[in-house]
View 1 (cartoon, rainbow, N blue to C red):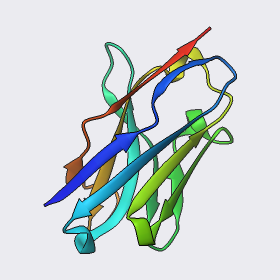
View 2 (view 1 turned 60 degrees about the horizontal axis):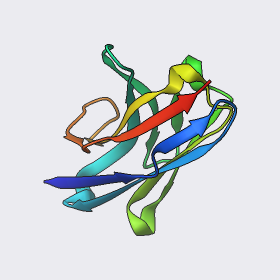
View 3 (view 1 turned 45 degrees about the horizontal axis):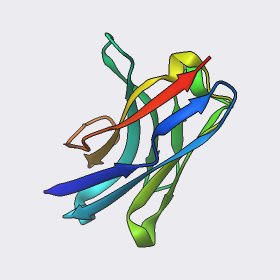
View 4 (view 1 turned 60 degrees about the vertical axis):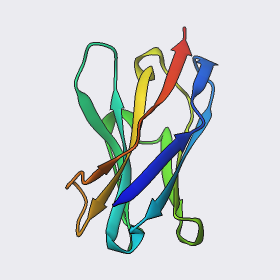
Length: 118
């Protein structure tokens, strides 16, 4: 099992920035990829970005150029730097860890709330 703990959410004005962190613990040796999902109010959870152990990254079109995902392998921590935030970025952000390959969705954090005021 892998445990994920997110932090860094909060309230920010449109155009502002936030940095989310997600620390993984437990059987992290199986994790091949980590990422973030976003669930806006009343909508389905959608992928935002992921980063493989190789360092390859992938982003949703809506956040390209504004968000940056990175990881610190020594700390088993993944970060999401969010810049130029928009009202539509509001919602709960979930950290996810994938075994074997990106997209499996094996382990999920409890989520951290991001609210962007316009």
